[in-house]
Length: 594
Ligand code: F6R
Image (cartoon, rainbow, N blue to C red):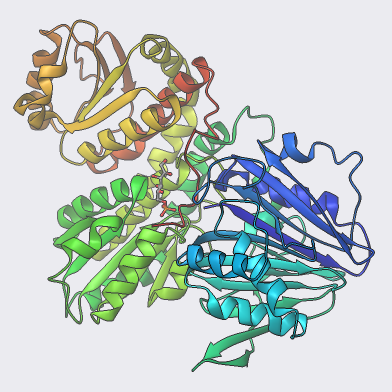
């Protein structure tokens, strides 16, 4: 995944902004970090293992420059070590490179370079790029040396390079995101817009196969066409996210802040029904000629499952939901005219993009539900709609899950002539008024979870995916093993895992018929000694060691009502166990590798 950033300016003084930008990207990976600065024609590198704060600290004793590149790493090739941290330098320190992605055939290039006398110091694939450029510089100018190096590469990459004596940044992109920011006294680039919002709101999104050169006053973009380079003209997009959205404010973690933003996000969606109506009408028309497959990963996949339920219940639309990484093996039936609905917060998840590419080659049409404007998925789709949740920094998806579900609800409802706004506003109001109660409950439950090894989450119907999501939140940030299950399926095997004291969370249906069945399932686990935690509608009176009444009367909106206390339960458990919920181990926010 990794985060990369670059700044080139007319005057010296990029270090502080470089580090500030890099910190905004820490959610993409945080096992090592580094920066390279160009001043007086020379490149200076500071890098190491640990967070950006640990590696570059407060910049004391570190010089400054008129250009700089930075990197925060999520290891792929090569372990976590100071040598493997980026930026990587060429033998004579004249070329510095940062990279996000994975390169194929790098072992071969490495041997070739070593035969030519290059000394490579790390185990990474990235380092070969610095040496390739250096080799090319023997008989080419810097631009052509860079272009020739990129021409050799296969795999996925977003690369930014700096060369001694050149007040310029050299960029290349293939299957890993890279955005250019346009400023008044310089130009910028980064893995995503969030890193640059404190510097500019004007962005150009590089496409696969493109190369760019940034100087303080110019941005030039080229594309390979039939092996030759041709210039590309591109207009800038203005992104209206405010940089304040990237501040934690008084919240202890981004995750908590983002959980609290949910009532506001749902209100915004409720007030934008006309915007979603247009998308819904297009989807409806597209479905006249083909079948619908929803594709997504992780939390977005759970939202996709809820979407399938809503589309079926409200609009009578039949669909299937495929996990993006499994799409290639499960999609032989997809044919020309079929419709792929891709759901992704980041719009950069490699598995989702690959599924979309594959579907396109079969002639399928692609529509997407995305959070990040300008992201790759939006540019690969025939139509996109935004969930308007604003930037999400916490690695665990929270507000974007409920926003995805709310948008799917609105789309399904308007397809059947419904008016979703009123019901959605009711949920938003209920959440505004319930946060304190949810918090209190989450703290009690976290006390119960904190010493347990396993927690099970059960739901029925539309809340079966909510149970999956509750389990995912808990396991990814607290590291307690958690499983979500359809409540009725539990007795077909997993019930064997229940022992005295095993916590089991039941998402109680609002529908009375379903609730009766859920009660049997609850009794099955209670009679085997499970500790039960119930989230239930007001007046349901289901037995539980811990119970929370949630004022929601609409079964189809109950995932929104239940998701918030589930997120808080996971959050409070992680905090109680001393884990940092914003940076869970081994994970990163944007998963740009397959
Ligand atoms: C879990 C989580 C991940 C993402 C998944 C897909 O909390 O955030 O499971 O949902 O990596 O990411 P997007 O939605 O960006 O495609």
